[in-house]
Length: 409
Image 1 (spheres, rainbow, N blue to C red):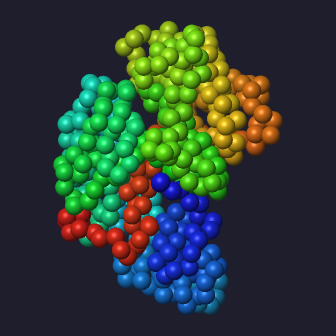
Image 2 (cartoon, rainbow, N blue to C red; image 1 turned 135 degrees about the vertical axis):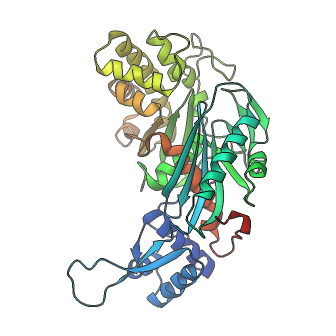
Image 3 (tube, rainbow, N blue to C red; image 1 turned 45 degrees about the vertical axis):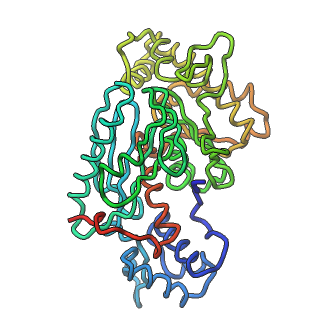
């Protein structure tokens, strides 16, 4: 299970290895911090923190630098900060209509980003891995001299088998049992496996660790692309389900009798009622009007007072409110976060969503849940992919081998 711990406390246990992992994770997620604060947070003495930071610094993972003095006298304290320019991962985001690659330094610093268009052309495994491999190699080539790639993470818009990155089902473009992770690792050829996760799952982790859900132990993330994906954090951990395919909020049935057909073969799923095509059809847009720009054009037109666009957002917002009401009643989250194209759709239809919540959510849950939009815009799932790439290093900082092929030249 992919975990998304908050940075306000270390994991349980007091072994040296766990303390190393806890300290590096704290610096990676929380940024520069003094040894004194680290000692307090870990619950150890300062000499222990000195030894831990010394080991991580010797491994090239952190640096210790004087804190800004701001005119104060005396010996400056030292801040422990991630070595963002020396350690990085490659992160990939595979959406229905675009392919994004990034080089992300330890600490979450995006130091390089490339993007390509993905035609909606069916099962296109060879095209996707070829483009991503080219983008990844270009990012490796432009990395600072000596910078080390310690992981590769990818976000895919479909159901992913845990462990090997097999896309079991990608309904929007017909991917079924495609060996995406293995094939991308082979084409990329940096000596590292490609860890693959569902886009909404990774979006939930990104928002929980770095974005609109920091400090929230229970949240629901809703991601809009062509359809709708969901990621649910319960007690600080991602709800993966028995086989890793949990949190498919987009296929929650909301309109079974008169619902629109869904790409999964059912009718009346949440994504069928609030996804890209539902909004564009409701706004009277032509069949060849597709993509995130088309969705955002409807939202912009509604803001300018266009009657058809406003009615479309009212209609879709009502169904979105029903979906949100269901997940709030089920999971009692502290926050519901809207990302991808749902970020703008929610902003344009918020009154209708809130009206449904007031009418259909139990008061004890309704009073708790906040509605927020993603902190990262279109890059939430990309940031989540980067965190997936960092996961092995953060779990075992000194036990994660780094092959020579992953070093930039």
